[in-house]
Image (cartoon, rainbow, N blue to C red; front, side):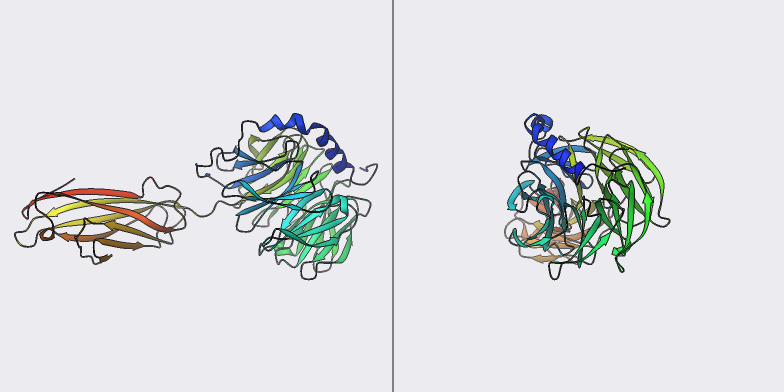
Length: 467
């Protein structure tokens, strides 16, 4: 299949979006910034560039629902996420900017001017730089993430459309959706173009596999995926796929390559071992972007003509669900959910009568409710004023007892104990002890079960009641 001119798919899409932005703005009216933010996501977050509505939809990959949206304006096209998941970078093809989003708050913290028609972005493995394909400027902008400023502009062939940084962080591959029929290679050390790799048709999507040894490039008007040996800079094979292949993604384990076939309304699944298509998964109309969740169990595909994201179960190569997002979804990127360990605290108190040495024994039970293992945690028990305790498993200082735990597997529990001599208590008055989680790693997403309280009353050293 051939096209009448360079970047026909890109320019036709952008022209349509420019005429429809105002109408499309209602596409995600019910998804306000920060909506449902209080609930911890059950799975990875997906950031989707809704190119027709000027928003980025935030999809909870655990529930397969769009939970909120972030307004960035213009026509957002590409999304890239920092390695720590803290920041998303979104290109605005009509505003010639990159929006910087804090993923913890879903707010835009900076807007960086770049070249004309920025179409995609990629972050270096160390998170220090973002490379942006400026399709209309025939260049790549380099953003310093520490200052959110452009520090270099690199010529990158005609109509650079997609960028990808290799796992080593040493090279950037840039595709050219034009008669250039090439992939440009940029050195991150020198910010210069070091080579140009010929391919058989317009290059579009690109992703690295086998630890960076291979690059998979979709040839959008060739119905092929070119496999490039990055050591030699040569094409070793061309894999037939569907019509107008665009987005490309490699599974986290490197065994599969997913390709969005834009005019076939399907995703081609390529075996990395054999270099052949092993499955074709029907998705929504005009699929464009592809991303895997960090576990590789699911793949997400933007259906640009139906305002949806198709979720694929990668174990069965079948559609698991469909998520409604904003208008004309384009780029997509997964934000891994950071490790979370819900630490639950419970407290028991038992009176031990004694004519001389009566006491109250306390047991703190700490349970890791998951989903992640606990590395370390601290529970602090606060005693009544002027009260002290003794403990073989905690640090008892003054009227405070500090207990440390960890590591602790998800679902496991452990206990800590301390005792308070009743001789130090005022007879006849109730005394309350409160145990509270005061620290944990990884973070605790649920504070509702962090505190436990018990009250005991000492009538005499021989009569101690606790509730």
